[in-house]
View 1 (cartoon, rainbow, N blue to C red):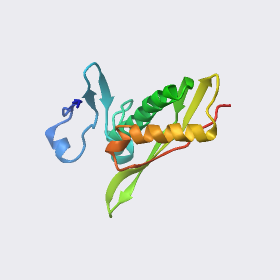
View 2 (cartoon, rainbow, N blue to C red):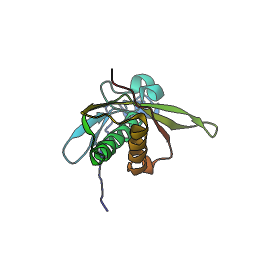
View 3 (cartoon, rainbow, N blue to C red):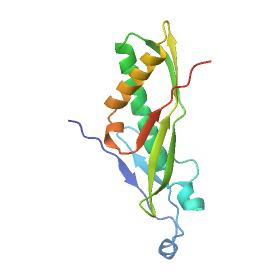
View 4 (cartoon, one colour):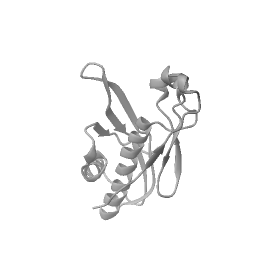
Length: 155
């Protein structure tokens, strides 16, 4: 068993009256053991109150799913004897209404493009490796969001 920690910190930069009217910045930080990331609410949700240049929770969720899948895929590919030399994923998450007015990231599509040194897996072998990676990915196992993988062939 492992324990993971993150420290989320926000402080009001405007007056308390502005806060009560909903006119306050959503910029904050997310701190991890060795680094701090600038974060914000999604600009799709809070518009001008989002902090420029910061990552939002929905983006972090998509990135966490992509990152976990990649790391697990690299492990599975290595065990299968494939030498991966580059992996790039243009992951995309979709947030939409569920159950009336509630919102959720309902789908995440991973679009990895994988380059190999030497023998490339067949389409069937690549699909199996991605399936195994998805089944083993800790983050995918932790969410109810639908996650699909559409590998993009190298040019």
